[in-house]
Picture (spheres, rainbow, N blue to C red):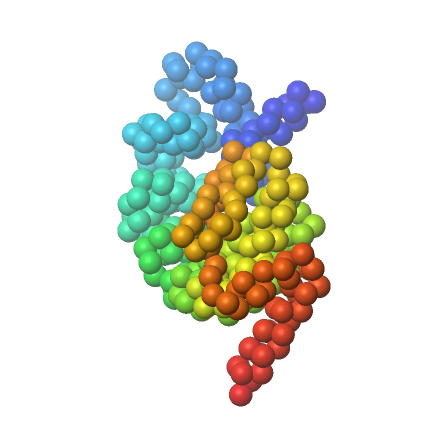
Amino acid sequence: MKRAALIAGAALLFVPRWCQTMTMKHFMAFALAAALLATGSPAHAQDDALSWDEIIMHGHRALGAGDVESALSSFRTANDMVQGQDDKTEEQIIALTSLGLFYATTGELVLAGDYHDQALALRLETYGEPSHQVAIGLRNLASVRQNQGLMAETSTLLNRALSNLEGIGDGQGEDALGVRRDLASVYYGMARYDDALEIYEDLLPAAEEGQPEQLVELLTSMAATHQAAERPALALPLLEWALEVSREQLPGATQCHRDGPEQPGRTLAHSGAQRRCPASLSGSAGHACGAAWRDRSACRANHEQHWSGAAGSRAT
């Protein structure tokens, strides 16, 4: 039993997050499939009567390895096996979601949206709102709609997903934080800069307590948003703060210096990942504010002053 538990734990490395709410029966079957596939057991190569769980797992591993034909064949087979069976609703949701993720990965967004729509309808029928499962379905569909450029629909779906998470008491969990980050990027794409920045401000305390990579990403996003809103005086301190965190807390980082307006979009690399520094900031207001980054209280004061003014103007 101890060995089985270890295998089950290892299987989480291969199972997508939306699959982690399965029943224990499916979870252990996924673990067994992961063990067989990882060791190249002849049982997988020769057995033509794989279980539904093993077929789904094989599809995701094939997709991860770039074998799209095998992945699509597995997902279609798994979907056909459970369609029309009233006692297989959970399996139907997973199969439809797998097909949605497959087509999103291959860029066939219309098909991806269709399958995520079907999966969401089943999630709503089975779990209702609010629920974590419905939040997952809404976020999956929102990802497709964002890639289609349908920003207004995307923001509606993400706000609904967030309401579901808040409704089950998970409004401050990792999933909710991820939804908020997605929503901020959508607002940026819609030129709703103040709405995006309001979300970023809410995320900042958690980012300061978390991994430095996340803080750097958030700060540069905030700086880019202020710059897009033509507020370089507020953007510059955030960018400098991000560079300070990168230099001091990310050993693998390469410095991204603000050497002048002729160097927009310099690359900030850290821990094997690539980040984009916002375009270099120019203008007398931006340069006058350049030293403020060293004083975090001054940086926060600038933002508090901006938000109090913004709130007043919105109230009127």
